[in-house]
Image 1 (tube, rainbow over the protein chains, first blue to last red):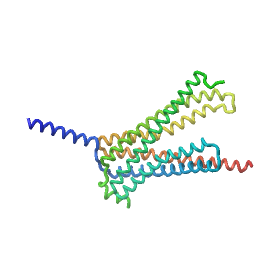
Image 2: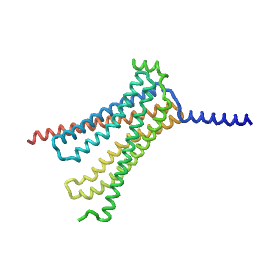
Image 3: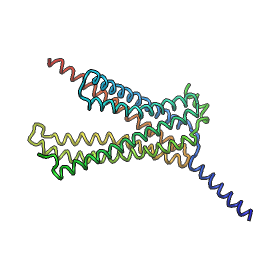
Image 4: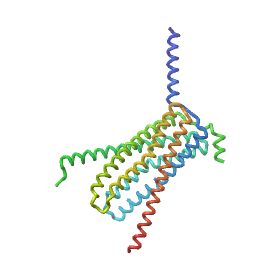
Length: 155
Length: 148
């Protein structure tokens, strides 16, 4: 009986450990893998710089126009809003690239592993914002479709 | 020098538990994004064909008889440009999922190479578009200077 219980328990433990290993494997990076990761990070850093430049430009234009007494609140407000919204993914992309490059250079495993959090956040933000845009577009299409079917807004 | 540095300390760097979970999440969202991109490309091609014939019939008696056809070409070119980074992103996500499931360093390498290609394509596209904008601006300013 005791042997039986022990057997079942050990089987459970074995399955648990095995499952743990399957779900989160640790693996070492070889030279080619590191090279690919470094190149990806370099291009990401370039893209993030360009993005920051554009965001700065848009925010500056919007704020400058409003301060100069422009009454076009929708256009200038939109450019400021887009700049504020895009600061997040751009800074995440930049964080990913800089942490990764620094981690590889200093051979700092902690830094390297911290680099992937902003990458995940970046893709999550992009995917969710694209999804929201698609949904808004579908709503817009259905409203205009119904409106044109019933002839709303026609004179 | 940098190369030798990575060579000697090669096996100190590893992907740990936490990174694996972040990379899993990254791959999931990247795959979703790329599939949305593919759908967008398909819609663009449909729009190109539809708009081409519609605008063509609209512009038949106007100054630009080939306008509809031109519009189709532009839309299809845009769809093609959009398709390439989506394909890289999809491959990145697919290989990443495989790599994490099997702890396969080779797949991880393929995955990051595709991510690099995606970022590289977007970077070069941005540079090209910026150059075209700059040229257009210079052209416009020159035309303005001569017209006054």
